[in-house]
Image (cartoon, rainbow, N blue to C red; front, side, top):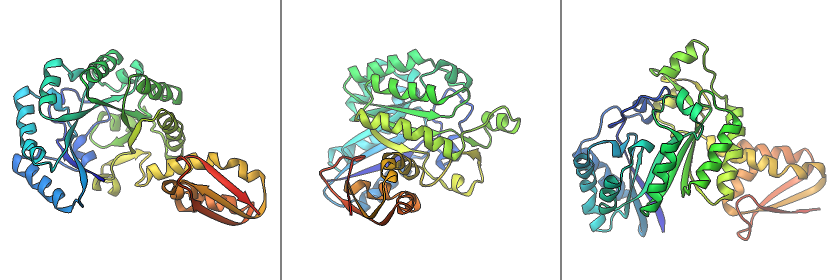
Length: 332
């Protein structure tokens, strides 16, 4: 059964805090908050493209959903209920801030078929949170995560790497804490310098230097493997390539690439395949899981080309018995 997402972006809706890096309107490529009619039209357009049988989930992204009043939350959630009752949409996902989780809110979300709550944790270092002006504490993240799990929701915890005062050690600590807090899913975002943010001013004043692409790929490859080994679903790696980011009209600096996830997976496989560089052969046949073929070969055939320096002929073959980062090989 195919899985489909219907994303509804509500840029900075009810977000009581302005983080130094954030300009959701530029990141999402959407300026206005959608009306009821616009939400319905978007749902209808998506449903027409789905191939049956399917599993569909609607996601409210971009703002702090639980920061708005309960009546307004109910208003948005009620728009979706007819589609759930007719089995066209199975569940709802929301994103919000860790300091905007209360029991009465969770009770409401449960009644309206919300299954997953994603928290923008960003970091489990208080120093990083403070310098990013997140406006909440590490304890807020821990308390909200505990409450979400206790109420039977699927917990998602998003993290950012390369924020002010961040280090690879702090980011790895954040990843390990996300595991410990019982997250079922996560997203990994390198920090980007977006125009019309405080971080942009710090960048212009040379007070902040973002991670560059290779450094961000290296950090993320280490973090990715922590989540993979702990069976946490990695929903996204890198920001969605909106028109504003692709055109660089609003992006001043940072590790942005339209194929960032593929670059990260190429890096992981690069390290996995290192032992084969100590050998030479006329033909090397590599067996990997079917879904890992492109990553093992590498972005722009990076890994294949590296192996070709030591092995005259290279063959990659699918083997469904292997896991994502496992491989077997034969040498002739």
